[in-house]
Amino acid sequence: MRPATPQVPALPQPAESARAVGRERRTRRRLWAVLAMGLVWIGILAWRLFELQVERHGEFSERAQRQQRRVLELDAPRGTIYDLRGRELAVSVPAQTVFADPSRLEDRARAAADLATALRLDRLERRDLERRLQRDSEFVFVARKVEPEAAERVRALGLRGVGLLEESRRIYPRGEVAAHVLGFVGTDNHGLAGLESTWDREIAGETVRRQVLRDARRTLVVAPAALDAAARAGADLHLTLDATLQYLAEKELRAAVERFDAPGGVIVLLDARDSAVLAMASYPSFDPNRFGAFSQESWRNRAVMDAYEPGSTFKMVTAAAALESLAIHPDDRLDCEMGGITLAGTFIGDHKPFGTLTFREVIARSSNVGVIKAALRTGTDRVYGMTAAFGFGRPTGIDLPGESAGILRPRERWVGLTTAYAAFGHGLSATPIQLANAYAALANGGSWHRPYVVRGTSRDGRYEPVRRPAPERLPFGPGTQQTLVRLLEGVVETGGTGRGGAVPGYRVAGKTGTAEKSDHRGYSATGRIASFVAFVP
Image (tube, rainbow, N blue to C red; front, top):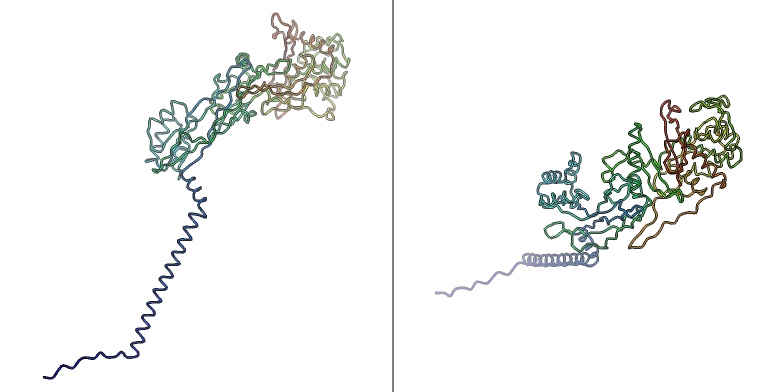
């Protein structure tokens, strides 16, 4: 046998060898490209991580804090308001505020219904609550500063996503007493009327900041010691009001308004020595504990806001000018022309016919014609000057909001019959506080003081009296003052128009007034404003 011939592999052809080399190179290039892309991707990730973890660490940390925490500004207790004898007129008490996390409520509609029932909301309030609980929010107020009983009913529901916060609530323990002076406070703890408004900065206290936190289960909780600043109550107010006198003034005012079927009324009681307000009552009134249940008209403090023609109560001012200028003497006789006088073709009537009266009798019986003749003797400059000196035509500056200045035309516009009408309190207007303060200035001997309600403030046991401006001296002497007081005492004596104001055992000096009500056509044929101003030793 022949031996087998060995197989010798065929040598690659040149074309095949080139293709193999090309494939290897392309594979290497792909590997390098993938490696390069991997390195670039790793570099981008490293740069991004550096940016997030280092460069923007503060930003994302702050964002996380915002997502995990919510800072609520809650009310600090407002300062207490005291009367002249230290009795509480307005105080702050603890109250519960109901809040919710809508995102955690299992059934928002059912939760809204249960909360509305527990809080005893009306139909409109229920609808508003339903809308608020449908929001894409993690915190909403359900009800602010609710009664303790309502808070217990909410707590008893055991609703997931509903909680309570402690705040303070303003209450007025004497109800309607001094409501117009005190004013009231809104749910945001800011005063909306009266002293609560004008002294809001002093008595509101410092805002309390609480942190509401979200735990790992997205539950909103209030950290027990999460106060950023200690709550500091506002300053206390100490008033000139006497709660007993205020109650009696309101009681008598209501009785008088109902007796005469009047739409409203005002009583102002001042200490004539310095014009401290002892009582200030307006009717209709309201209860500041639930002011929203009353009309806005009943909120008006008519004593400082409402200006009216003072009528014959203004004759005191005319008499002061006439007596001081020596244009008239109490025993001078004046022809009152049996019911009216015609000046510049205009007839001005009296409230009843009088013949010849002394000036003393003119004041006691309140003759318009008699006082007009005294004013014409005195002259416009002197009558106007005395009117301005008594504080008419400008605000008194009392520490209550919304005071009206009244109306007093400039001297250059006192033309024609202006002086004649002004002599008996027409053609100008005044507020009750302006008129009362004018009589107080006469009573104390001629010193016009700015009336005030707040005696001082106290905080941390330290009392600080309110600084008051110096009084203004009125332009008449002691002789005129004493004579005028005697004339006004005659008003309440037998035969005077104010005899119903006499008080046994006291010397009472006063003046009645009946002014026609003005309307858009001029003066009402039937509407009247009746008033009486008086003072006693």
